[in-house]
Structure formats: structure tokens, C-alpha cells
Image 1 (tube, rainbow, N blue to C red):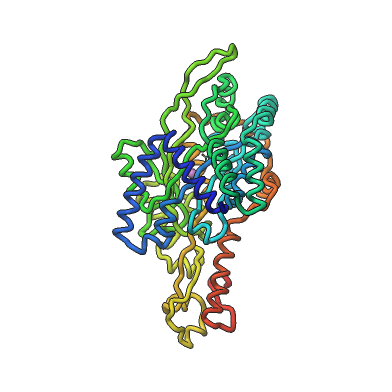
Image 2 (image 1 turned 90 degrees about the horizontal axis):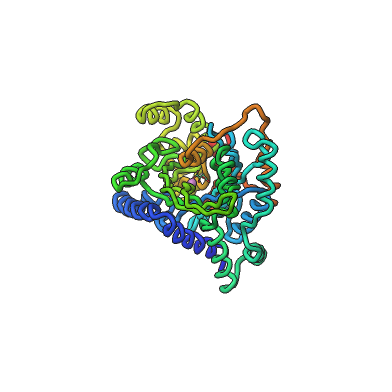
Length: 458
Ligand code: OOG
Ligand code: NI
């Protein structure tokens, strides 16, 4: 099996697992499928401008959380076997007032043709046990030691993953073993939980307890992609699933919009066994999983993204109408304007119409305007830190505590690359390369002697 086949099969297996574990996820998939079918019927080819219906139907992202650098680099190997590579750095420690002591990246395919078939991605967070704002020296030391002692992934899984990366895939039998072990590593464990330890961590941060209070990791949500998220929000409420009251990300626009919009619901309390200091077992409840759904739009350039960041800074507690007004004052709805103002990434292809000599004298924008070239928006394949923090928060019983007088442990994208022991890809570089490759190709196809003038080249 190739990395692509391993990834697609892994996504299917996780989906089956999560459906068994969290029944509301199955409802979410039903509602998503019917809305996607309705949207396809209503808008036809337009619905597929941001990915074929086959891609969108298979599309999922998951989220996992691990405890330390060793576990993070193991995750990188497991996902590497499936053609998923770390992209982007997210520091959630300061993204919300709640105690979220993690730094994150997302593992995903890089190539357009891989993304077009199965873009499965996993948002992966790592606890920062050394951050004294969250953990004092004593607790930090015990947490570090606990994490050092546990084993999240069986050695055979790691060996097979390394082999798959080296050899570009696995034979049938090894592939089955790899997929079995990988899937079960992300299942919720039924092992009894050390009650005192879990509650001690939970009083500081529910996220820390979820990561370091138990001996295993688990997939905490699996997110399908929907073509109309506002409609989905209403339909889920009609089906009796209480959603968070907002859709995170930019407000609704007439088209797919920029970036990413997400909403979620809390999973039910799940029964778990706890063990006390005397070894007595008792039954209890935890809420560590939830449901999420998302709608994806165009990848924003640095400039486009700065408009969204300005929106977040100014939005405050505006009404839905006020939010829409603010967003439309910052970013045009129209794709043509995104291109001329360089707010989003596109790829380009000739339509077959011959350029006139006047077109040749001008640049890319003129060629698009005269219909010689088609501009297709590039799908946003990444995440938004503010939304991610919101998703974390929506599932917390309490905000936890933090001691803001203590200094933060410094941690940045370079430090994350060091932890991973591999390149940490920059999303803008990836989108920029896809765009540039398509322009170079276009220049050849149109037989242009000189490079085309493009909005992003001044
Ligand atoms: C990850 C939350 C981030 C998203 O969609 O922004 C995320 C987590 O809760 O572990 O999945
Ligand atoms: Ni998510």
C-alpha cells in the first residue's frame, strides 16, 4: 500500500472507530452527507470549485494531544508513513484566557494531487510541562516523569512506520498490522484512571489532565467537511444536538469565502473507571471528546490573513449583523477582487481562448478578465489558532488556573522542528509554490517570452 492508500484507509478506520465511540458523530455524518448532496444538486459544478465531491466526502481532520518531544516525534513518523507532514506552528498557550498549555502543528499531505484525493489531516498538540505559568516546579517534574515512563505507541508500529517512510509504502500484510496498531493507538482506553493524579492536573488545566493524567492518547474529534455550515448548524439543533452557539472563523459570505469556518458540539459524559489511592475502583465520568464540522474556503495570502486578524481584533461582542458588516468592510466577497488585491492564492490555467496582442501587453489580471485564463482558488488546508483555542475551550468544564507572573517557556516554529526532527513546513511557502508553478506552466502554455506581471509582484 502506498502512503496515500494507507492514509485513506486509516481515515476510514478512525471514522468507524469514532462512530462506535461517539454516536452523535454518526448523526453529524448523516446531516453532512445530506447537505452536501443538496448543495451539489442546487449549485452543480460551483460546489466543486473547492474540491471534488469525492474529496469532500472523504475529507476529515482529527485532533490528538501528546505529552512530550519523544511522543511528538513518534507521531511524526507514524503520519510520515501515510504521506502526512508537519505544516504550521500554533501556540495556543496565549490564544485564550483558559489554561491551554500546548503548542501544536498539523500533519497533512503537501502535494496538490494527494490533497485532491484524500487530504486527511491531524491537528497535533504537545503539552509544555516546563511552562511555569501552568505547572509549578514540583508538579512539572512529576508530570515530566509520568510522561517519560509511559508508552503510547507499540515498538512494532514505530518500526513499520519507519519502514514505510523508507520504502514508500508497505506490503499487504505489514500494512494491515500497521493500520490495526495505528488505529488502536488512538482509541479511548478503558484502563482505570488514577483519580488523585487526574484531579490534581485537572485543577490546573483540563487539557493537561486529558494529556498527562492517563497512560494513552486518543482521537478527541474527527471533523467532516460540509458545503453549507450555517444550514448544518440549524439541522443539528433540529435533531436535538446542542451546538456551541457560534460558527468560528469569518462570517458567512455569498460564496465559499476565505479560510475556514467551524462549529462544534460537546460529546456526552462518557463513563470511565477511576482507581483511588487504596486501589478501590469506582465509576465516574469524563468529557474528553466532542464533535466538530467545518467548511473550507480559499487560502488567504499574508495580506488576506491580516484582514482576518484585524477582524478578530475588532469584532468584540458585535451582533451577527455587525460581524458581517465588519467583515465585508475588511475583505471583499468577490473572488476577482481577491486576485487583484492579492488576498487569496489561486492557480491558473488557459481556457483555450487565444490572447489578443493587447492582452499580451498586460499581465495576469487582464488575461483573467478577458477570459483567456481561468483562476481557481486554492483550498485552505490549515487551521486557525483562535478557532482552535475556541474548540479546546468549548469542551472544558473549567478554565483552570495560571500564574501569569511566571515567565513563559519560549517555544517557536524552530523549536517545534527540532522536536519533530524534520522540516516544519510553512503554509504560505506551500501555497506560494503551487501558485508560482501554475504561473510558470501558464507562461509556457501561452508561449509568452517574458514573465507575466502578477499582483503579488508589485
Ligand atoms: C485541537 C483543537 C484544534 C481545530 O479544528 O481547530 C482543532 C484539540 O482540541 O486537541 O482541531
Ligand atoms: Ni478540529
